[in-house]
Length: 254
Image 1: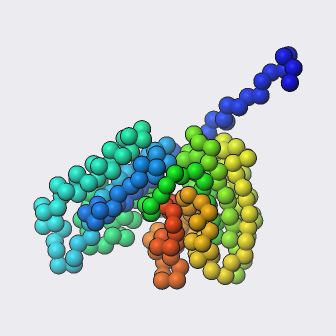
Image 2: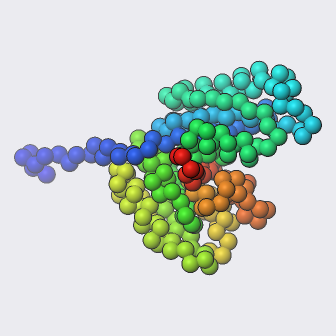
Image 3: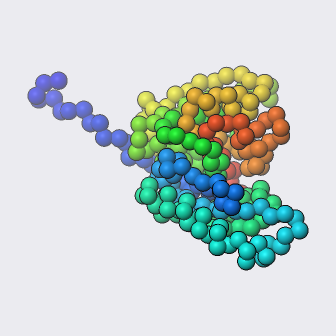
């Protein structure tokens, strides 16, 4: 470069996010679950709602539990909220006593218009994201979320199309997500793409998660908790070593 040539502009492209992402963070607060500082820092660019919940025995009325445990639950949720504040993000908090965890999380996710729901597995420093694409996903929501979370760092995202025996066009789906991420302003050199065939995609996602720091995936047309927990042989949440963010399908009115 000569003195007359302008210096290369290293300023990142501004994001063009269409819908600021909101993440619901369910935490079983009275069982000692918490959230790491690194995970809070990773999520801080998005809007966050912390849901502290406690699952009750069938015979215990929720009103009785609320009177007995609400103070402890509120204090535990406030501790988690403080972790987000330390990362620069004020958060909305809720507390629920329930007999049905899945139903409560689904209900609150719809009420707050959550883009995604977090399964807060233990984590260290979070930099690189795996996005397995194995079926229908709200591409716009997924791209808004991933672009927002990666905007301020140097992390990368791997788009991994997983084709099974159902005729799913993994290559086309991966390309659509890649183009949408580029439209949102994420640099091309931070996105990698690949496809693979698999007869047990959930199990392979779990195995592949060891190479990354966090997994972001769509519900794939299943219910939120079917995607998270599934049956005994197809569990992402239980097997994955990383935190998992499941992008919700839109419901009527969203």
